[in-house]
Length: 308
Image (tube, rainbow, N blue to C red; front, side, top):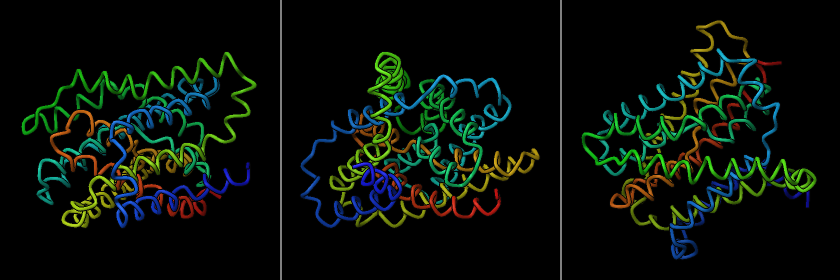
């Protein structure tokens, strides 16, 4: 069982890509699953994140405060700005633009920690940045979405804040409590969590693709181009900022991956809850989930050489 889980977590990008392709070609397999399951599924993933967090993970907030602050600032400025610029440059319709902007305004994804590990980057810094940006998400994500899209689309920032607290923060807190109350159970469970999270994320992507397979035929290519550019520009700009500030290659790697890899599952969840009148708003997050795992694996190979 352990070998199977290791295999699944190691090939997460391929698994998510496979789920997306199957759902696109055979939408009847997942199209009947209600999108209301997206939020509970994402909550399960965040609960797993809470189970893996240790006291040492919070100490990094005090041992690397400048680098973590830098990463969070980059996370909540570069990615939203890039998303907005790409939406304008490609003249995306509102329902796709809001989906792209949501991706840009979300915190870093938990997969960034795994990719940083594979890239031989600064893992402690990566975990610290992910934790910090996630804690800030209930305030930063709704606020920035409102700034960038509030003039053209109605954005309920309070409702979005409550959704993030419910879907992200609350499950993480519950995970922390369970870890402290049942350490033996948690120790056994954490070995299987990466694989379990990979399967759940793949299922979320499959549901979204299955529901919108017919619409993807008309807008899939342009969304893919925007998503790829968004991710690559995030990776490049994150590394460039680290180099400009003369940080070590390992720290530059961590910042690059943290900035470039978003919690795109949260973006799709928020789109599903708050922008239901725009069905295509969930698509950019789903495609980003597929792409950033693939690009992250490739980036890890490149960064390994720089960090040896």
